[in-house]
Image 1 (cartoon, helix red, strand yellow):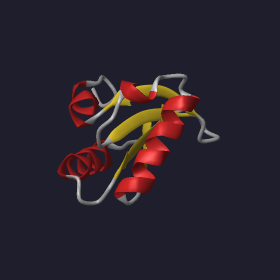
Image 2: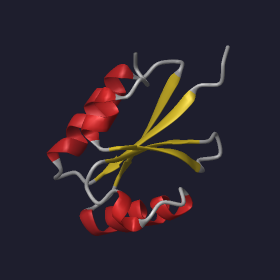
Image 3: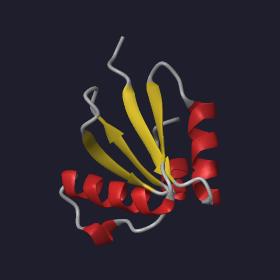
Image 4: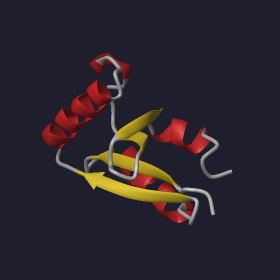
Length: 95
């Protein structure tokens, strides 16, 4: 079996788009796409988002909203930026 993709869906609880992304990802999760949810309060979320963008070698301005979705390695190292809820829904991850 191929190595599964590892999707991270991050956001803060009061964000309706985070709630939608979380529900969507968990419903679509499978043996080929594993899902990890990172739920933080608003300020810690933005610090997490900024640090993760830096690890992805993207400018802080690349994505400024909630949720923040990306693929990570088995060792939880960020690898591929996905975007927000609409980007997640339109991605080919769950096709």
